[in-house]
Image (cartoon, rainbow over all chains, first blue to last red; front, side, top):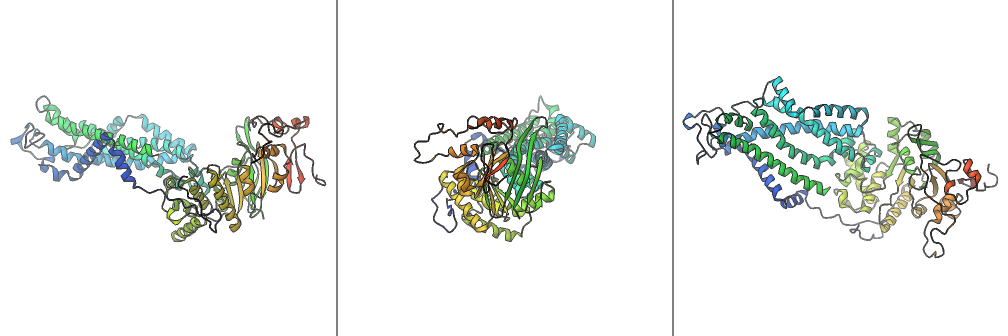
Length: 304
Length: 322
């Protein structure tokens, strides 16, 4: 109200209320400035950007890109870390650093597909259940609870064992286990948002249920979704790696981090670098997405 | 043809054994271009009445006729008809505008939702609407968070006018605004009414606002209309003790003798619950003039002067009326 300037006389009763629109600072600049104050969030952002760069440009960055596949170089097998092979070499002489770098793409690909699928399935179901409520909401949320009750790793293992391990199966299986979390989140948020007066205003305007659900309620979910997506990317990468480790995920010779840890296990007392570096890659990536997610949570939570 | 004709409307909430009787036998008629004020304390049924007219809540009994069409059943077609004829300005300009949308999209929503015009005609209509509520064009791409309370309420008014409704409901449109801004929003509404001739129903418990914004007033108490009449009649000679109590509670500048509490017409105690409405006249526990008949029999509506009706045992019916 402090923006109001006394009205000038005008032919329209009430006068022109000509208070200035508050200066619009681009949202991203506020975001960068706020996030910048939290060193941990910046570390998270740095890690996430690094992983994204590796995932996109990995084959061009890796010193021995061919080692990502099924190459063999017995002359250099099981070498400890050196200037030539920073992370050492594996049992058939492949450069571990190159495999870790190229492996970022597989992990990010699993995470990206899973999250996109989970959001596309879970968010509409959650919003529809919350907005319509009644028997439809009940059915949708009971189905959701059935899925929630099964531990995701057990569910994914069962699906992968049933359909045979491959990348599309892994992605579909994790997504089927993961949509429930997005449905739950969207349901809770939408229940709260649907009580806002602007939803009633939209009903009075003649807007139908689908329009209200997706153009009035959904846009108000974006900040919580962004936080949840960021945090979940880390967890999906972890689950993907666990599947690889158990042999039910991506198959060798693809340089997936979980498989690399599993393969290195046999050489553990001596060739520690085979498990340590892929393990560190998983660890750092998950930590990175968590730190960024926490930072975004503080940032977006504070603005609401 | 009346714009709105409510006959014997009742609405109960809760269970059949313990009903919350939000509205009891309410009849109201609003003519074209008329401005009706509805006053009453919280819980008197004002909001339920508005929601019934808007097609958001069904009636338990009675009929709702909108522009000569019976819309009591609230079928899908009825609701479309209602949304095309009745619009609402909400109480809280903060939460009644979606914070994520741009002003132009908020104002265009009724047009878009009801499929009025093309994208181009809608855009020009939105610009005209901004003009007519006295907001500059540069607000088109702004979001609600960038506007002041008074500006937001103007956006709410523009949205309600977008489809050229026949009836505009105003639910405490000025309650959450600064006094200086209140006056300007009210002047805007008066000006729009004079230019467009839209019938208006203003719900308020601010009697000062109602005095300026209404031609006729209906006073509600515990789900009933206890008195109706023209604004002049009610402000000059309120008949029902409740109306008298309400109006005597208006503070007047320079009126040194009257202090709150001394006045015998002030209603005592709290408004009863709609769960447990007193027998007889629902107002009798608080009425300074209640006698034994008020405790036993429910009063009928009597005409106290031409066009002024009150539900009270103690008022004298006008000569010649039944």
